[in-house]
Image (cartoon, rainbow, N blue to C red):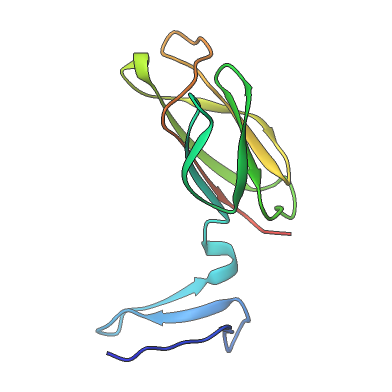
Length: 133
C-alpha cells in the first residue's frame, strides 16, 4: 500500500471538487468544501463537559435544558444546517429538540422531556453543515 502525504489538494475542473474512484469503476465527485461537517460535538449538560468535538471551542449552560455550542471558527452566515440529538434520562429515549438561536459563532438548542418540560440532556450531540467564514 502506498502513502500519499500532502498539505493541499485542488481539483482539476473545480478547486473544491475532487473525483474519488472507489474501485471497479465506481466514480464519485465530492465537493470537499460543501460536503464535510464544519462542526460536531458530543457533550453532557449535567456538568457542561465535552466528550469529543471538532471546531467547538466550548459549550455554555444557558438555562435548564438550553445549551450553547460555541464555534472555534465562524460560519460565513446564519444559513447553515444544524442537526441535534438529545436524550433526557427520565424521558425513556430520544426526544425532539429545537433551535433557540443560530448565529455565525454559535448555535443554541433547547431540550425538552416527553411532557414538553425543559430538561437537561445527557448526552447531547450537534453536527453543522454549511460554509465557514
